[in-house]
Length: 240
Image 1 (tube, rainbow, N blue to C red):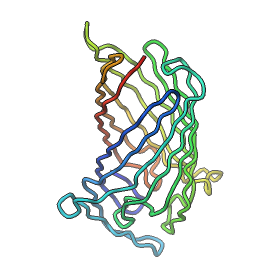
Image 2: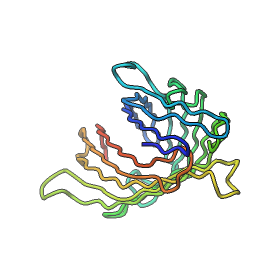
Image 3: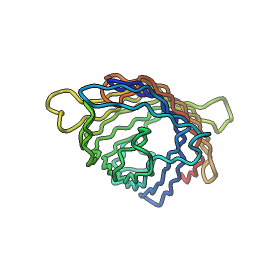
Image 4: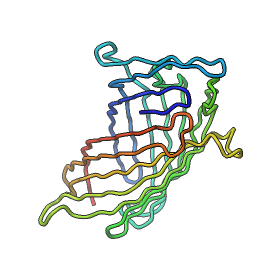
């Protein structure tokens, strides 16, 4: 559920993606498909918001933006205490602006990534830029490029004895701040998420990862969620 300053919007998406890792590189592709989008209409400052209505029966083949990405680990081992990497993503517009699935433009994302694992503890942080040419006329909208940031931490423990299942749980805080209002102290959307995942840890074999996250918006700026539920299922290989 996404909280806009002037209208309420419910969105449910299915995200299908794949990634290939080669040495210090990872290449990825992700495609979003809306399961349901609905909301009420409203207006403010002479700008009208029209509530969308998307469902699988009426719009069975609708896609949102596709994401093509490349990540590179610069320093550190794959499971070391400190790792430094960089990431670049390109967003290709496919969705409808009227349904709040896209802004209709090609966009880019550049990020610096820090992460580490130490015994039972794991952590990660990011800092980046969302390069967005669109300048929305809607009051309260980001209006252009944004600063991205986030931190996360978790605790890892084995599930039972003699098992290959590992559980990891912990909090995450992340957000975005529009550059044009950065020094005014407003225009920052902030969100918190508590997530847990279970995964197998079999070296040299296929592994399964199941994730669940529940969170809410901390700062009710344009696009910040009132609440959010995230689930995921992932198949991956592990070589070390």
